[in-house]
Image (tube, rainbow, N blue to C red; front, side):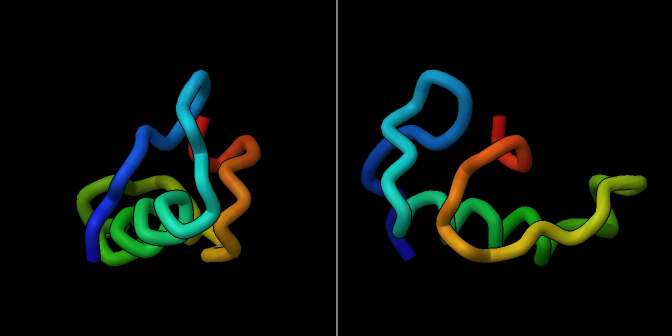
Amino acid sequence: MCITNSVGQGGANNRADSKIVQALLNENLSRLKPFPPLTVDGNPGASLT
């Protein structure tokens, strides 16, 4: 897994990078409660901004 560009508001938000960030956030949800799991679809949308 390698993130090549920024993800989030004002970021490059390429699909592959967004999917990696979504997956990593989901893997660490126990540290981020009370956030619900993200859909890993590569669409940064509101979930990553």
